[in-house]
Image (cartoon, rainbow, N blue to C red; front, side, top):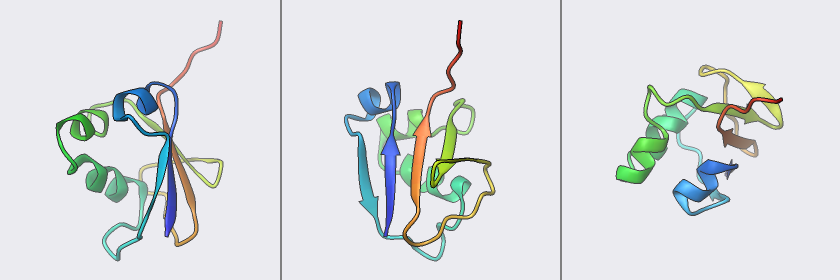
Length: 84
């Protein structure tokens, strides 16, 4: 089981702040998780589209597309932010 969290505008666009998901053999990195989530429907596909700028963290550490995901991990998705 993994915990997936959605922050900022993603939470609003998806109507959810997070969920728990069973980790399958095919979902072992950030790219695969994004692809799985995008299959849920139009709203999800828009958020997790390949050209959508989206950041991820695994266990509160910034992650890349190929960062592995393991059972028990917490994965957070959020839009890029700027300071000023």
